[in-house]
Image 1 (spheres, rainbow, N blue to C red):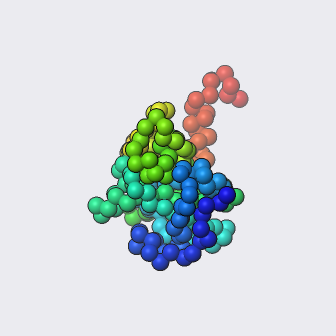
Image 2: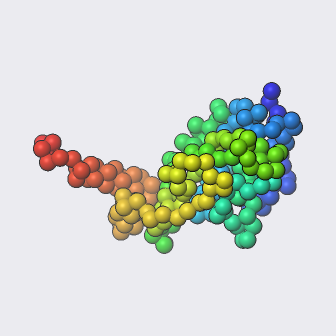
Length: 233
C-alpha cells in the first residue's frame, strides 16, 4: 500500500533558495523506506553545495519531463559533510523520485555540464549507490542495532576539473554515517578543461558543444596510448 499522502505544494520547504515545487513526504504506518514501494531515494546535496547546480537547471528538467520531487528530513543524520551556512539539514534530508521518472531525471543531470568561464572551472556529475542503515528505521527504533534495516540510496557526485566531491564507495561495509569527501580531479577532465578554456572566444553558448568535441578527442587519445603497439594499424 502506498503510504505517501497526496502531494500538496509545500510552502514551508526548509531550503529557502529553492523555487521548484517539492512535496514533503508524510509517512503513516511505515517503519522503513521499503514499506513505501515505487520510489527511489537520493541526495542531491553535492550538486548544490559544490557543483554549481541551481534551481534554474532543476526547473528546466522538471518542466521538460513533468517530474515531481519529494523530500523528507529525518530525525537522525544520514550523512556527514553537508553543511550550508552552519546548517546541517542536508545531512538529514533525502529527496525521492517515482521509479517511472527516475531514469529521465538521472539522464538529465548526468548530461549537464556547468561552465564558469571567468574562473576556468567546469562541473560534471556522476551517480553513486550507497548502502546505509534505513533512515526511517533508525528514526523509528531510535538506535542502530543488528536488527536495523539497511537500504540502498543514491547520491550525485561532482566531477570538477579542480576537485571531485563524492562518497568513497570502495568501502563496501555498511557505514553508520557516510562522509562526503573531496578527491583529486580526473586527469581527463583537467586536460579537456585546459583545452576548452584556452579556446579563443569561448562563450557559454559554445562551451558545451566544444567541450564534447574535446572530451571525445581526449578519450580517443587515451585509448590509443593504452592500446598495445601491435594493435595499431
